Length: 129
Image (cartoon, rainbow, N blue to C red; front, side):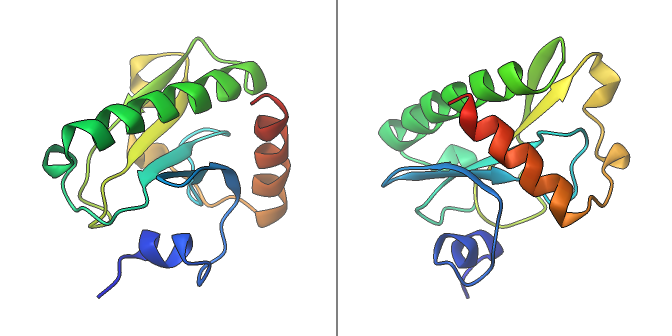
């Protein structure tokens, strides 16, 4: 069965897309820890990040680096934190989260955010790509 993210890639489920190329997709998390919380995924459905082949994994990190730069220009923060938990959805994904302190990287801080607010943040980040 296709993962939630595979359905997003296929356009079956909407997302607030930040960027996309033939191999990768970046979109806002619908339950962000902080505004600008973005997920970066390979389009190839692979469950575990360390099962991703070296070339695809290095490309994923370079794609994430570009997205992190745009988020940093958009959302006031000290850094863009990176987290790979890998348990929520069986599809490799990287969380890019604007942070000011280590405790900001806590999924207990995630909150439901109105769709309009997500759309506004997505547009702002895209302008900084």
